[in-house]
Length: 141
Image (cartoon, rainbow, N blue to C red; front, side):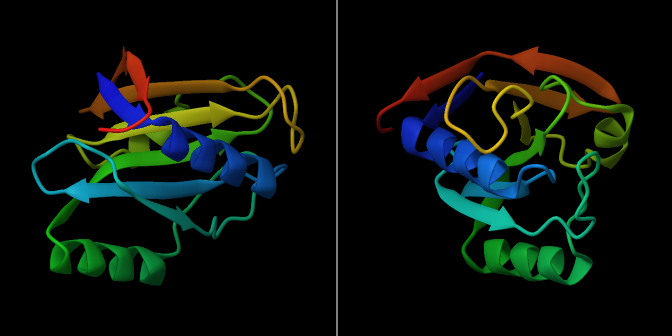
């Protein structure tokens, strides 16, 4: 189960809406070993695509060095789908390389940049196997 604050959910959704019609992507880091997302880190979609996301390799290297220096793990790796449901594509699965991360997808297909309904779902992706998990949204940890 992913336990995440409403503030972080709102940040992910806001990023997804801001980047629509391109996919948004980013990471939420947390203290190593705690499985608690705390630090929101929006990234730039280097692909600038409505159907694909890609972290810029130099930005990703900086991010991992920064997390190492802070003794953090990538607790959540998120991205948006702009025209389809919030379910991992084959490409998403092939890029999933963090076995302990929660892979969050938010779909902005219904409202785009506007306020309104969105899908917010979380998965574990290990060795190509997708397992959806419950999302527990809290006000604070």
